[in-house]
Picture 1 (cartoon, rainbow, N blue to C red):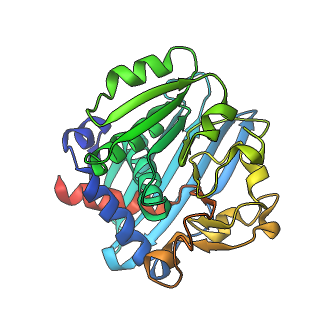
Picture 2 (picture 1 turned 30 degrees about the horizontal axis):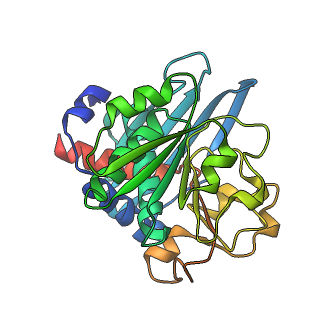
Picture 3 (picture 1 turned 120 degrees about the vertical axis):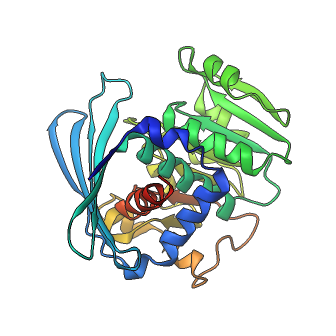
Length: 294
């Protein structure tokens, strides 16, 4: 049994396009996979342990990821992943899961932008500039390196300054915003990595026609649920308990789009919301691919 560290995975320097291919392939085979709902256990306010199992018969692996969150820790979210050989049940590898969680979440968000954003989008709004939004943006910058982008950052302490210094690209112009209302009103695509939010970020009037909203941690966009034209989710079972789930106008799994069962964007005017809760399907797929590379 191998123990694989975050540092070993980072050293592989997997290109963004390959990560997006892994996301796509996992979704193509989603119906063949065994994917129970994640189990969430809360110890106290904002502290939790999530247990996320999945079996991928076509890959010959089974896995379980355990994620925990401690708000005062940096990064606040961490965990471990166990990967088993399906043929004999032997434990093939134990992964530090922080890197896998970050890159698969970033890749899934980037895949959503590539799939559902208007083709002519030019303004990307980013809120919550932590590891996941950083991973998402680095992948988007690689994918859209030939596209001129204005990137609006929601000001928070000195995170926006650090972000701009770290991610410098010739095709990217940054703008800083003090309030989500003004930031979102300018945006074609909104990616939020804010982990906790009691209230909605902005009134519906702040969301333009044709906007795509990708709330990585789902917080702050409930007023959009019943108003947006289309909602894509990574798994029905994981969102069925959302407060306004029964009021979604139109809802499909992203896997249905990937398999060609439904279209993505019906028109350039549609407002689309993409809820990716984070499913073990991608964690276990990524782990199996990382293990092969190592």
